[in-house]
Amino acid sequence: MTRPLDGITVVSLEHAIAAPFCTRQLADLGARVIKVERPGSGDFARDYDTRAQGMSSHFVWTNRSKESLALDLKQPAALEALKELIARADVLVQNLAPGATARMGLGHEALRERNPRLIVCDISGYGADGPFRDKKAYDLLVQSEAGFLSVTGTPEQPCKSGNSIADIAAGMYAFSSVLAALLQREKTGLGSHIDVSMLEALGEWMGFPMYYAYGGQPAPARSGASHATIYPYGPFEAGDGKSVMLGLQNEREWKSFCELVLLQPALAGDRRFDTNTRRSENRAELKRIIGECFASLGAQDVVARLDAAGIANARVNEVGELWSHPQLQARGRFQGVGSPVGELTAMLPPGVNDSFEYRMDPVPRVGEHTEAILRELGRTGHEVDALSRPG
Image 1 (cartoon, helix red, strand yellow):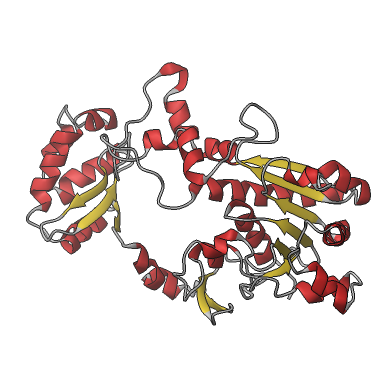
Image 2 (cartoon, rainbow, N blue to C red; image 1 turned 180 degrees about the horizontal axis):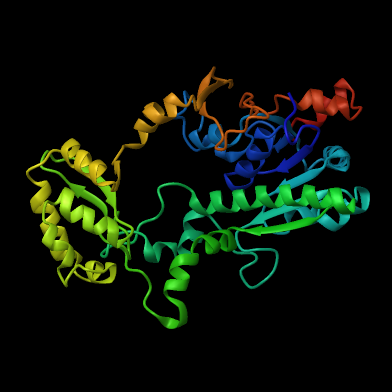
């Protein structure tokens, strides 16, 4: 079986989420990803928690199918070994502090003198230049800086995303940019330098609220789990205390909703609710009407009416229920992967492709592949031991 990135070698100076998430996607497609870590402790994300059978939930998620190379880069000999490795590689991905790689002689210009075909992808909070270049940038801070918090939460309280959305956005743009650079290299024979910032990645995902507030207009209001500008669109409680998520997209659906769900066909022409703009403006009154109807129904009864009317709906699941979601189970979207603590369940990457299977190899322990990789570079047993020990 041939995968799209078989034969591609990626070296990654990575920690936390953005860069590891990018390189895991590359590994999924067959790339050999060599993760360079500190001897002993490794990537600090290994210690975020112990929820995955003693391993960190963040680390397990973003680091399967990689090789771990433990090097003390303060040693000149270890740094030289890394440079040799990068000279043989196709891609270098890094999200160290701004300027850190350049200080070690690992900046893109220096590396490309030795390997003109090398693709270098730098991931940072705010980019390689500009007044924010050196600011520390953690996921929540970038969510705040990008205006994400201003449109997320309740009217009374802004809320962060429940996952690392700024890191994920940056990681996915780094991933697609590396793929584009590999295609470009096929045309030109030369590598590229890619500069991905978390702020710009999340800023792209803020496109709708930015244009909604274009030219100084008011931004979308924070509306909890409801849609900020479309109504009814959000969670509604049934008489049994369970919530049902529903969403209307057009006037045809609004008419069906009134006739077949609320059993109030005259409401469709009510001047308070006959356009989405008016429904959104009068959402408090419409919410009361919907609530009175649903109060006499169980959640399953509400879903049955919505399905009959062709109205989109969903269960309001807890995150743990995703592991046993009937649709994911029916499509066989989970597979076991190895790890230092035994087999763990992992979700297969999105995008079922009938020409290859995704790579789903183990999560490595710190330095698990150090000896094998250094021997590839011609280092002897004594040198291997010296380069992989601190000090």
